Length: 634
Image 1 (cartoon, rainbow, N blue to C red):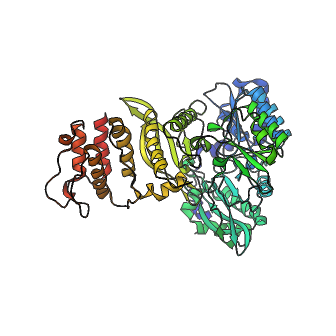
Image 2: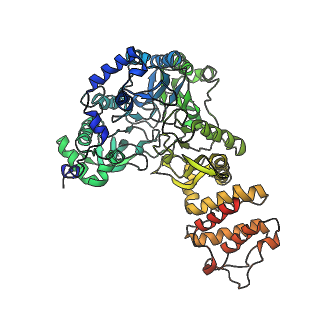
Image 3: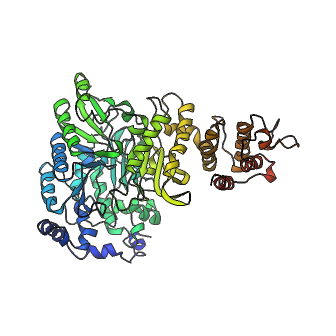
């Protein structure tokens, strides 16, 4: 079997592929210049829908007649001069607003078509561009924001990123030539500071027989972690491999269904072995087998705030809640970097900033300057790594407001469940299933949805936990679905309360979830959280706690154990004198919950009694209990 034969099964071409054939990108660029002269009403529908996106220009219904522009910042690294121009463009033409994104980019908003060619010209005069940041193109290459500077930085990836980008940037043969967008990440450090394994192509620091280079992982996307390709590359081999990879994807990637034409789907259908064999053929050479991946250090920079670098200087963190920034603040940050650091600053995948290479003696003065009067070096653990994409206010795909929801949640948790300074909680918010907030990699992930509350349709979220991005790479799993935003904060508070009370010193939520919460089934976690937030805490009863000695079990047995704890919380008594193999030893049934405590609702009492009943009369799965609790609460 060959990739050509597999692609032959996908001969149908989707409507976007047909649209691409109607004009060249030189013609599309010329049309953009004409629209700047003629105004918004002259723009053709196909240009709004597709071609302008190839230059990073997006029409936004939420701001009628105005555009969003996505600007490529390779590895997120900016010079003070570039920051100044970005800030000036936002302040003069974009209502002084900008977003910092999870791809280490900047998005300007509220732009009029008449000003866009000039803005692009100004950006390109300092070496940055908006080209190919949308549609079926190579998106911004992300890397360690402390590349070549941090103590654990081994390989400088900046020259490699330049090589990779030079293969396709502003090359007409590559503009919108791919079946779908293509995301790339490269990390030359032992810490994963750029969500390495969530991309179509990932180069992770590795060691092969004493030589540093990169292991290759392919096929990551929203809903899937990249898989090892079994290949090790020396730094000088990366561009050669990458060129073969992108040519292979352009040639053999599926072009029928828009929902199934990322690289991930080609790998799934063909198998990694065939994909790698084809890459060897296209490159005209073999590659070394994978070495040892060295990305194993926990990420603590956002928590620490001041990071000592190899040369003794510091990187100063700047918390930008939900990535909401301004042109004025960017100008100030650039000026700060020039006057107190090396003149460089870096956007991170957590939508924050680093001011780089600040001498130790200048750190206090730097932190007293603008924009640190509005953006903290270190905030609460809820804000330090808070991520949120644009919601309904700015994005046509958004289902919930999102950015302000994330900020409100972090504010509430900071008051309700304060955490010590050494705690780390990564909360990631996506306003829709496209997942631009990378919710699946958060310690606690939120995916916007509609929910029901008192019979009305309201903004809601699916709540996930367990995303991993340091020691292992795993996607989060859903524990609560369609939760109204008005209730979500109380459920999340229960999770972080358990983390606060049961964590080990300096233990992150990521490790806490692996150590303790992972022992419980999803249904058990949901039940504990809902009971505590909806019934026990409001009723003045003792909360159910997560037990460090808990052992994984089937739901039927978990229900019995949680039922015993719930019985004791509601009555103050033990249900049985003894149990064996998840059943009571004695035959005498326990006293009814409501007889021991009349304050307990009869329906809840019945649920508890069925949870602790002998095996044949007990609930089998948590969904049965949760269904009855939902009916009880409504």
